[in-house]
Image (cartoon, rainbow, N blue to C red):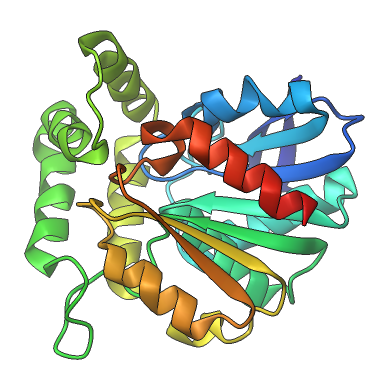
Length: 270
């Protein structure tokens, strides 16, 4: 069941809500530059197991409205808070992949973990994605600058190049095309704005404000968010557990989807 929720006077966010009567609720926040459809292989299975699965399309992406502004982590986490309030969610698991993981972390800090009982960070782009003298494990700033320029100059090629490093396991040409089309659904200005947010925002101080049980899932072959950043999250978040995925890149939820689904369910049921 899909519908829209107004988060600002002129901005509506698309929400996919599967099995609303489920025993436990999982709220999924997708990564850049996709949509809630990235979690297709969770949505196929988990509702059958009795879970309520809610997927949000971040503003500017998927089927959500695409305003020109509002792509900092504060506003994006406020969007999530508006949706949580509209759906009256409580005692739910918040799961965020990549940039969705960054938004989830800011949500936990900015909104005092409102309604969240457990947190799942999936190849999360945190605490800081950019390589600096004090953060040698991030991506070189030039890589992000190239993504931004590629978005403005030839967004389809940029998306194709990004898709080439997203997965570790072999994917078919048809699947690659599907992933590419998800990226094309986004607005160009939103695609670039999120990349600029990676440069500006440091989530280091947010990590220490997380108190709920936290599962950190990270592919050891991740070429987008290096595995070391997952280890740093584990060090900084109280009551967290890191599970390395040995045969995954940036898409643990697809590269090792059976293992991912099993570990997610196990964590929720603990």
